[in-house]
Length: 435
Ligand SMILES: [Zn+2]
Image (cartoon, rainbow, N blue to C red):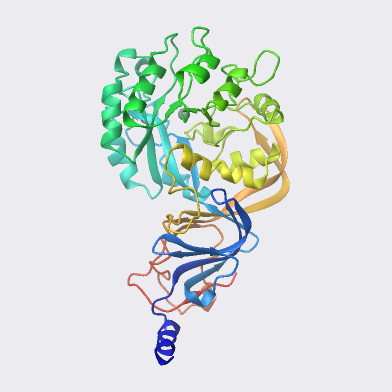
């Protein structure tokens, strides 16, 4: 008993707290476990440590009240273009890309997958230039074209679609390269798809297909029922550019047959790949995308797409539930890229977390052709954690009121939870925050 009292005494002075950070009272949506309910979430050493109806606040070093908000796994966007910084004009391996950190953390996105901006010739430049320097977790689909997405001259060069070199690079960077991409091809040949599948098979990875120009020699149904394997990903699934609906306005039977054999359908909204006139009838037939992705680049973010939260809100307006929407931006994409440690709030998983507010009001959402859809709900990101650290806090819900601080205060946070303004030296003692 005495020993227990001594231990409790130490705890009272701030030693050995069970948790670094406690998110209290939020509505947790964790598609992996099927949970959608008010829960506390505790974090320790960058990992999820507990999810329960009530977690003792005194066991946590830092407590943040998130009642009235949704607590979700950090959002995952599996189709973006973030190979910025090379200076190349009109190139996704250049100025058409954006640096991830400017657009991700503020939107609750903690993981992005660059969708083929680089190929085996320039992936390592992409890695040192962007992957290694970003706070965002950046992964990649490697383009089957060695030069990556540098424009039509490169992307239509069949002789640069080297499956051996691509699979070799993918295996060299296992865990960073999570798939093989083929995109933007305008010829009649199947070579890009076939070589991408060969490379992906060798590296044991999925393929993501942007099916390029619609060609009668290579119809969509054949891609989805014969060329792709279970687990391969058809992106831009509601583009309307490649017969996703048939002549009668119903979902192409090839899409339904493809799904039945395990092909994955990803949104890839982009600047030109989302049509409400396709999405509405498809959803009416209960053909939903398996995952949302933005196809983020310098144009899509300023046109119909905007950001992942806007895409998610758009699908609320299209009739999906909050739980359906969150699954398609967390656990579903994590599984598609076979990174099942991500996109969930299981104990032991990296504590990548988004805390979202769902506003009610009068909103509008636009597609890639300039058509509008009215809606009444809109997500806004309040708080983002990456590996258990606050990396974005819109309204300062983790922060003390400045008037209550000593004159001349400096960086206040603690490294155990603060990724933005941590104090120079680690502190002890419990920090609470009133909202
Ligand atoms: Zn793209």
